[in-house]
Amino acid sequence: MDAGKQQILGYFIEEAKEHLDTLEQGLLDLQSTMKDTERVNEMFRAAHSVKGGAAMLGFSSIQKIAHRLEDGFKILKEYPITPDQKLESLFIRGFDPLRDLLGRLQGPFGLRDEEADQLVQEAEPIFNQLQAHLNELLGEAGISVEDEDMPVPGVQRVAPPDIVAQVTAVLRQMLQQFRQAPNPANRQELEQLCGSLLNVGETSQTWQNLIQTAQSAIANPQFSYVTLAPLVIKEIRQASELVQAGRVDEVSPSSQLRQLAAQSEKRRIALTVEPNAAAEAIIAAFNQQQLSQLIERLQTAVK
Image (tube, rainbow, N blue to C red):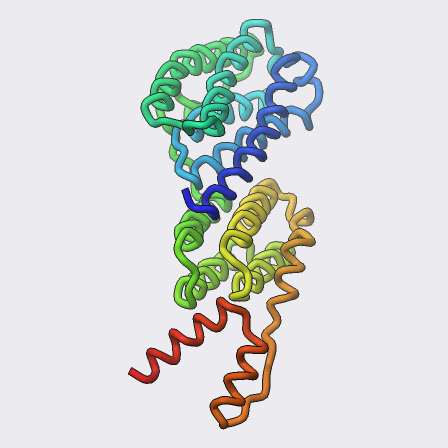
């Protein structure tokens, strides 16, 4: 695995571990958690974030388990039901395979497809029981829910297009470019992909500011993809979740991303037409990567 992909994976694992801590703490005393609306919302967002990160990196097993948990938390978030011991137990049993998958992912052998598929298959009956019990509790509470609003056991719901889904699709494309060896062509492609995200949150100045900051950082050839990829991918994905949740005022580029963007201002140097003097000026002003790119362009020009 190349260094850039390894670093992105590391960021995902660390972030996912934090989200799993949030889920575990909430589930271990679900009755108390249900009395605090914000804690329930945090659990829903935690499952949603793990699902989104896993989808972007192609870990479908983690995505599926997180999605089923998210469906359950969505019901807790939207309907005033009283949880019992059975519900708490089923949620914890559904949470365990998610923790197991993440543990295997960060282990020395990584997450093997056959093991991941088996864990997902074993978890399916648990989530079917969870959904059935949620339906029972809703019925006992006299809550009538339209069929189309309820998750159906064993059936993947097709959600309407949303900001997170749109952004995740673009981030996947950006991730593919980040995995390539840096060159002017794929750096320009990254800038264009990043720029296409401006339209996603076009009514939000905070969102546009974040995307423009990321674009500026990407544009600077002195920054390697190993440096850029984890930061850009993580900040844009997290910002999309804030926009989706109606928390656009909280969207802001980190100080690290702003620093990279600030350093991307194009420097100008004066060149004479005398080749040796021009070469000396360029060597003094350019870094190694910029020199390599310039040589490639010059070689193309003289062919």
